[in-house]
Figure (cartoon, rainbow, N blue to C red):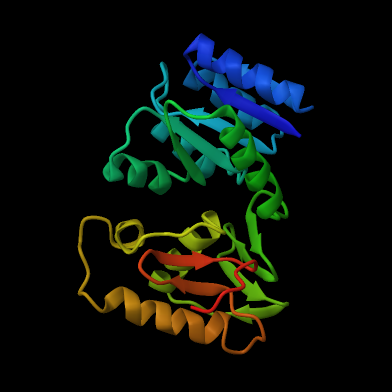
Length: 228
């Protein structure tokens, strides 16, 4: 597995490098955002570990550039000393797949890297796939089991956010912010949209992919076995 570590604190970068290298991973390290962006554009990685506070280009802006400008769908694990919900939401909105707060356990970081590399089955970089559900970010085409699914703009934005964050419980507030930004929707707006989304991506098929995790939020996955 090829992993890129973008971290400006040398001790942390070295610890991650040494730990993952022992596990047999090929590791590149970038100490600033500009070098990190260059690596992501010119090389292929299975996972990127990205610090939030970086010289040159900060982690949030770099994550956006990787997604938008470089059109890379590589899984991104964001690291930061900021633990507030708003900072986490900012990281997820920029395109991060997972989030760890410093200080962290290297064993847990390695486990998360492994999960990110295995769970997201991606086709070419413009395509996201969860189970037999596919979304193409270039053409905005969504299909499941080869059957095309037509979504309006709002449903597509919800679907895109789920596809960029698969197998993870997403809180209601995070999803609302990702779709509506600062314009808080009516209390039933998200529920109504999710109901419509289920009608087209789940109802015609045997296995549901969009799940309500009661008391926590929502999750798009083909690995969820418990009842909603």
